[in-house]
Image (cartoon, rainbow, N blue to C red; front, side, top):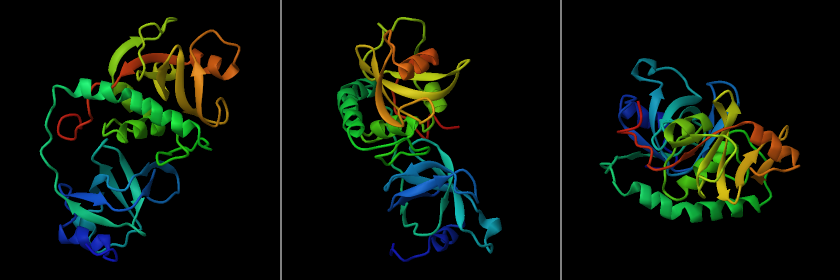
Length: 252
């Protein structure tokens, strides 16, 4: 398509179909609703989406935002039409690899190295951040896996449900291996996530109020550090990514 072509004209050509997929040609922001500038996620160029709203019944209305569902994680959000550049995309058949677990396992060291590199950049916590250098907690983890061609859900509670459950946290972390995910919250309601580095240490992007305002390394060991103690007190469970999120298998 030509860069100046209006995306709405493309949607009209396909009668605002919900079964047609589109590829983004630019990075964009995803918002919580149709009006407010409440960022919920940032979306990489080349990610795939389908249109949820408007539909053919709103054909003659004016829109500044559209509601989309992303292919790689099923995430739903609003995006601005301004500066949106897209092209039609044909989904290939997704193969279910029995070796997925081993492929992911082989990439864990690279994932942890990527996160370490991000931590060394100037960064701060950004709600909805996935593009970097500023991330939110789940944005850091999702992007780390996405950069290595592994698709996982967007939000921490969704990742918790998607991951292979290891255990509800007690006092011992001896069963953890590098790359395992740590889920934090209150009464098993997850609202924060980190990734285990080894030797009791884990990376996470934490906020200003109770965290480090960016990517940091905290410990599960006994410590006098107030931030590590705070998050240890909220640790719910641990999980492991053993598969890719799939539109045709996982999403409902």
